[in-house]
Image 1 (cartoon, rainbow, N blue to C red):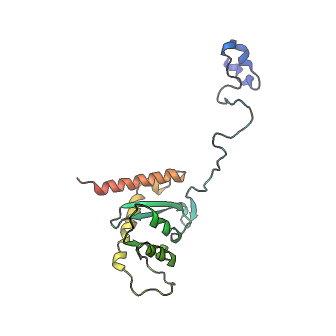
Image 2: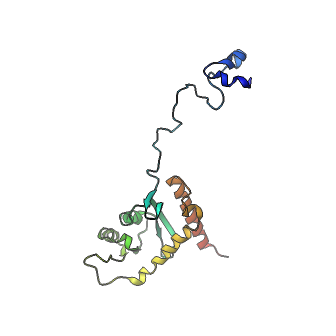
Image 3: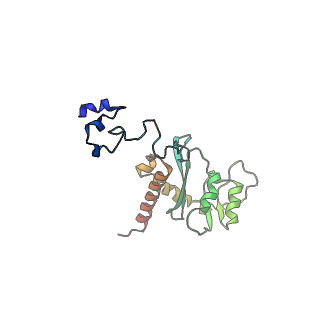
Length: 199
């Protein structure tokens, strides 16, 4: 009987060899159990696939994802967002201000990548002091800069380093943005658990 399987393509030989009460399924056997023989997409095949919307982009370092991380002053992760590697930091600053718990901090510390008048204005509108260094070519720079407070930015960099110790995060092993964000969140959770763990 198994030798007849290739021969039944297009014919219903199996139905002829079975008793009538068992011949319930009409059509081809094996892996192809479609009722119609035409080629058709799989379930959900109308959805557009590809890297659009998956937080992937080409930067100087190659094809990568950028993790925009928000931490407290101790360097504990609070919230994050993902964009493609080619995206700039400055346009994403207002998004970072809105992420996380519904508590506005007293100061927002960021590197020169976030330096812009719009970002400083967005922070001040929320009652937050922006501690972002000015770029060399900026005009009307204030004389005072909170350099002592700015030294705390190193804790943010250390938090990013802790997250990237996890291989799946550092190498972006996940294909979709949702799955990768899940692993970043899991990693941030491990870091928070370790920070409150007492021996």
